[in-house]
Length: 64
Figure (cartoon, one colour):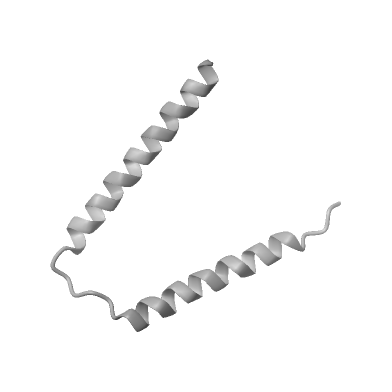
C-alpha cells in the first residue's frame, strides 16, 4: 500500500510539473506568429521517422 501511494504521489507531482512547464511555454509563446502548417508537419514527420527508426533499432537487437 505504501509503495502504491508513493508511486501515485510521484506520478501526480510529475503531472503537475509537466502542466507548469506547458503553461510557462504557452505564456512565452503568447503573441508570437503561428508556425505554418507545412513546416509544422515536416517537423512532426521527422520526429515520427526518428521514433520509428529507433523502435526498429531496439527491435533488432541481438540477445547475448
